[in-house]
Amino acid sequence: SPHPPTAVRLSQTPEKHSLMGTVASMTGFAAASRPTPLGLLSIELRSVNSRFLDLSLRVADELRNFEPMLREAIGAALSRGKVDCRLW
Image 1 (tube, rainbow, N blue to C red):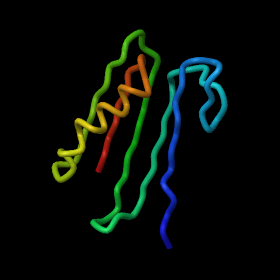
Image 2: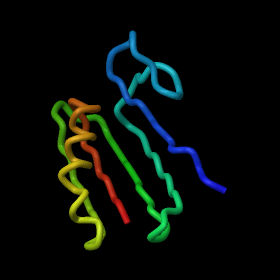
Image 3: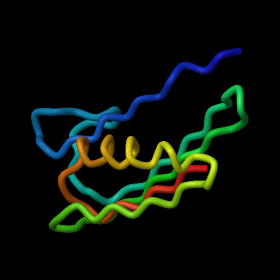
């Protein structure tokens, strides 16, 4: 059976809401996996509070083409925090 895409919206302003309510801290963890025609796609995000955005990506070799798109999407959603992202 097909799986609907999962979207998580992160926000730093009180008037915007995520799936869990207003974001009060930049500290968090998220992980998700979805089957694709090419196999299972998994992502893991970890973040801690930081004054500026410090993004670290670890991407499987076969997914390297998606790294710029992933970096841009995370950068558009967040303006601060030390964020570690793993995609495989």
